[in-house]
Image 1 (cartoon, rainbow, N blue to C red):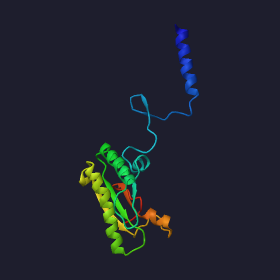
Image 2 (image 1 turned 180 degrees about the vertical axis):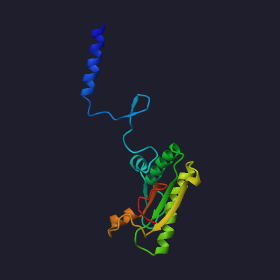
Image 3 (image 1 turned 60 degrees about the horizontal axis):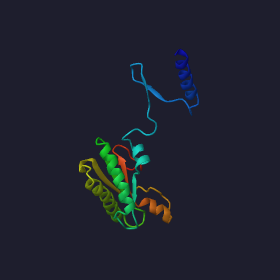
Image 4 (image 1 turned 45 degrees about the horizontal axis):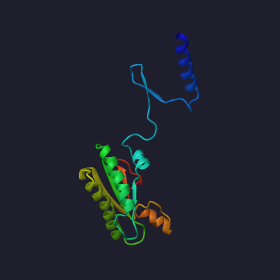
Length: 167
């Protein structure tokens, strides 16, 4: 009987030695360790970006949502439903062409289009704030059509996190 137990213990030790690396554990304070989570913290800006996506893109002078945009916003709504303590800010942006006043208004329309969809999906309106940066805070400051396409965006971020570093 003891030989079987020792054999089983040796097999477990051998399997543990063949693992890809040391397991990450955390002490619970009771002498028991539990595996720690790897990756972004639940409900964090990093998790939003990595698992859901934080951006919806728009056509030139457009503020309507495409099917791809709606799919991203559906994922954002599901993520926000999972983390009811998280509030977000949606920043509407425009490319550098056009007047400042026009681009500020366009950025507002873009941010509000994203916000309205999240609210329609059941997210409390009080959890979703908007801001327009117009053309004052470019995502891609170059002057190519590809740069302009990156600038025509609404970016959702966890409140308190400013991915564009704009004020």
